[in-house]
Amino acid sequence: MSDEPNVGHILQVGLGFWSSKTLLSAVELELFTELAKHPETLAELSARLALHPRSARDFLDALVSLGFLERRDGTYYNTPSTDLFLDKRKPSYIGGMLEMANHRLYPFWGNLTEALRTGEPQNEVRSGEADPFRLLYADPERLRNFLKAMTGVSRGANQTIARQFPWGQYRSAVDVGTAQGDLITQVALANPHIAGIGFDLPEVAPIFEEYVAANGLSSRVEFRSGSFFDSSIPSADVVMMGHILHDWDLEDKKMLIRKAYEALPEGGSLIVYESIIDDDRSKNSFGLLMSLNMLIETPGGFDYTGADCIGWMKEAGFRETRVEHLVGPDSMVVAIK
Picture (cartoon, rainbow, N blue to C red):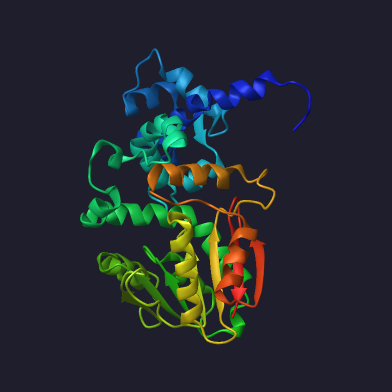
């Protein structure tokens, strides 16, 4: 960033919620799903989405200026990115995460200042409601939609791990906190010799098994039920934890890494991936902001640097470690026993 004073950058970030909410409302209105069917004019979109004439043109043209739509000869089109990632009918849809951001995170982040001063979560728990994730797991349909949203956000990194990691050296893998199962699915699809296990709470089983079956992997990928707090991690040559460690406080992070170490044979590997913060803590803004989101959502969770994670891995007994970039803000930390 230039050392010259820049009021534009200050205003862009300070009023960033304007552009954020514009995108979130477009997802809520299913604008991109509509345009994926066929491009439409201002009048057609206004009628289809029930937009008021006072707002419709500014709303759509704001999305053009933000790079989420294209406009040619008065007709609006998705961009290649919004067509791929924000059309609800495509398996690449990541809008589930944005839907959650719109309905839950957007209002909760209004209490960030209080969170910074108290260290306390600012989600539903703040108003005395039950743990939202406990309620989520009690509702099969909500859980299914949530896990599908997690798949959409993670797929790019999952596919990169499936290609980039030296799977030829191993025969089996367990995905801890597997959710819908996309990580172990992508690994198994790209590496036909790998036998896979998805490890998660019992409520996840039917969703996982349906997803694995849809990908033709039921004979090679199985579900194991359990809590990683109360149970041992199933043994395998590779243990994977994607977007798991940042949910928990330091003591729990170290406990999970120790359990992974115990589940591995000599020469086995642990893969930890999420939006790993750069060691200088000055470049991966997404990772740092995700850590603030953990402040909003959890009692003790936080994101961390590659050096932090390597330190915990060495403490658990791992002999070799490395950090590798995956896609976007995500990197993996690999440790060998």
